[in-house]
Image 1: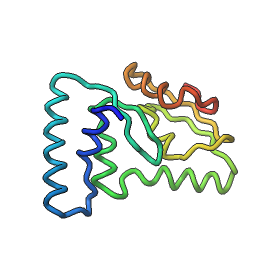
Image 2: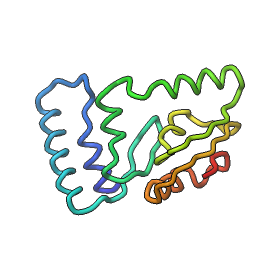
Image 3: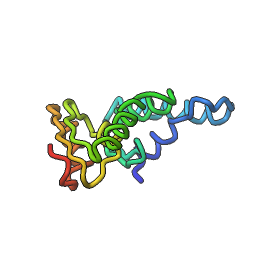
Image 4: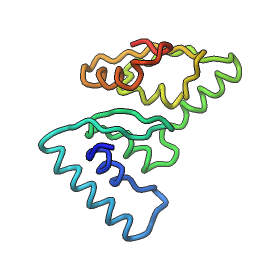
Length: 138
């Protein structure tokens, strides 16, 4: 685990945690993260939707998922509904970012995705996360 990943993981606190020490620890690590981001944006690897995804340290998705328990749950439910009806998912993700929406769909071997990401920084992370999967085209 990289130091950036360690720091980011310690920034996260479940929304239902109201204890003082975990909140204080998360706040301290958030300040460390803000300080580091003033100078660089190193890659880190975080768990999103049960997948380990590479992303820039500045990426806010882990914070969003940690803070609101139901944030962005709809795509996962729609994917499950489509898979039940059709047996597989054929999807296009325009603005794929790092591939977090594809990860939310919990892709199987029979699923096919086309991921479109114009930002070269995010495209590099998308390739890093899904470059070895033949059913995800970038």
